[in-house]
Structure formats: structure tokens, C-alpha cells
Image (cartoon, rainbow over all chains, first blue to last red; front, side):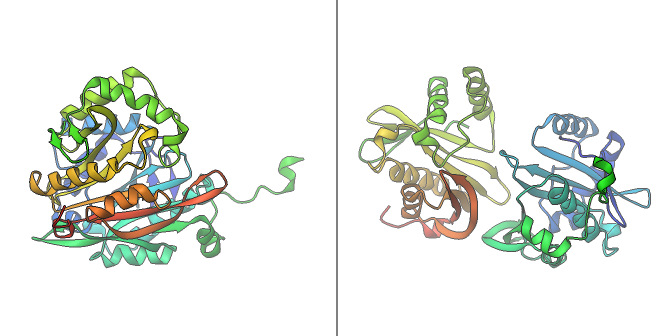
Amino acid sequence: MALGGTIRGKKTTLRLPVEPDLDAYNRWMADLRVRRAHNIWHEPAMPATWKERFREIAKETQAVLWSIEADGKLVGLAVGYVWGMGNGFDLSQLVIDPDDWRKGYGFDVALALHRYLFDYLDLRRSDLELRADNPAALRIADRLGYVEYARGHEAAYRDGAYVDQVRLLMEKETWYERWSSEREYAPLGPAATR
Amino acid sequence: MLGPTRVGRNGVSLIPPTLEHFKLRTGWRAAPEVGRFWGPRFGELTEERQERRFKDTAESSTEIEWTIAYEREPVGFTGIFGIDWVRRDGESGIVIGRHDLYGRGIASEAVRLRTAFAWNELRLHRVHNWIAHANRGSRRANEKSGYKQMGLQRRAFFRSGEWYDEWLGEAFPRTFPEQA
């Protein structure tokens, strides 16, 4: 489970991560634009440390890592945790290279990933935590169908001050209400079971 | 980290856990009375797992754990986990493994000692937690030490024919009651 396979969006593709991606991961974690917007996955570190982290997540039973590509170029990463009883998912990281922001990649990859969660894995809900001063991410979550259920006050720290963290949930029912035309596979038709 | 001794009221103390204390957790995790609001009641319930867990806890710089002692007997455990030293925030948890002792105020006193330690010794800014909304005893124990609701996750888990909500709480030094 721990290294994610291919999930295709319209502009982006979540794909199996590979060791050569680690240089870019390190660069993003060191980028203050990323650090201001998100919790980071790991602190910047030596290549050997990243290789060790990569080996560790590959062995994980509940954490899943994907790399994100657009036009054949690595543009981001996603990390999530499948809940212990397998009925939900915490999306903990969705990082897009800051040089590729405002190209619609964030929403495209989020839609594809949620299609996989609900239409393929048949999960009940997905959970997300965002900083209250990240309007771009909050807009994507709202468009997908997430609803705020908790607000942690002064829970994140950046630029010398605390900021609130918003917790949001998306239910499977919402997915099918809003995105019923989004399918991982086309219907097989009656001939398939003949 | 293994937390230092904190002597409280009414026979309750927080003491540094030992390997023997960790091994008691296996039986607590397996008990239906304890599992109503905690865990799936299956898992790697072995002594080897507890040995690894004890070593990892002792070496960790991002969590602190105590054994809860009542009249000098280990009866549960509590701690603060996933401490972020930049945010100065962590997630707290508590389990009273001896269900025959429920209702004696042990959790309230343990939470008071733990929360005072978070503010006065660790210099944390915030502690947060998740509690089954229907677990009134645990929720009240935390509220008495200044935890306030920051949200409610509806229908979080299912037990015996009904959905349970999860109560999300948070506490700050300024919410710790003065008389505590």
C-alpha cells in the first residue's frame, strides 16, 4: 500500500514515487513558500536521510506516498494515511512546486485522488487539516465538497505568529452528489458477465 | 521521554513507566470494558511489541509518557504525543486500564498533573486531543483542566448499534483553572 500507483487527472498524474524524485522533495521542504502554506512532510536533510525516509514509507502499512507529474515533469507529492479500520483517509500533504502554482494542478490532482478514494477504495470519508490563511487550499477543499468540523486555535506557527488550523471532512455521499460522473473506469456493460 | 514523578491528590501519581507497566497495556487493550472508547481490541498484543514500544517511547524527543499510579499500583497511562517544538503543541491521551476503578476521579487528577506539567515544565503553548463524545468521564476530566471543545466529528466510529461522535478539545496555559 505504501507507495501509491497511478491515478490520472486531466492535467496531472499521481504516480509511483522513485528515488530520483527525492532531490525535488528536499527542495520543496526547504522552500519557505511551501513551509508557509503547509505542514511539511519532513525537514530538509541529506540525500542519505531522504533515502532512509523513502525506504521507511515504502514499508508502512497505512501511509501512502505519491509523486505528482504534469506534462512529464515532476511537480509535487501527496501523502495520506488510510485509517486503521480502512474506512477513511487523512490527506496530510498535497504539495505543488511553488514555481507551478496557479496552473490548476492543485484542484486537478485533488479531484483525481478523491475519485480514487471514493470510487475505487470505497472509503466512507476523507479528512483534511489546512491553515486558516491558505485561501487557495481552502477554495479547493470547498469546491470538492469538504465541510469544516473543527478549528484549532493558534495551532500553527509561521512568520512570527500563530495561525488557526481548520479541520474539514468530505463524505462519500457528497462525492457522489457532486462528482457522480467522475469514474475510475468506464462501465463494463452486460457483455462482461455473460 | 519517560515523564518524571508527579505526586497528586487522593492517592494518584504520575510515575515514569517501566517495561513491566508497558506489558500491562496488552491486557488492558484486550478488555471489552476498556475498549468501548479505545481501539479495535486486536493488534500486535505481544510482550515483544511492548518491549519495542517502551524503547521507542524512552528514546523519543516528541512524546512524553507516564504510568498513572493509584495507591502505588499502576492503573493506566497518559502522555503527550507528537510534540511539535516549533508550534509548542502536542496531542494528549489517557487510558485507565483498571476498569474496576472507574468513577474515582483518577483520570481527572492525572489530567491535572499532566496539563500542569505541559505548561510549567515543558513550556508548551497548546495541547489538543480527541475523545469519544459519549465518554463523558474522560471529557469532563479534561474540561476540568481547561480543555474546551474546538469541534465535533460526527459519526466517527460505530459500536453496538450506534454511531459515536468524536469531541475535539484544546487547552492553553490561559485556560488552566487557577485553583487547580
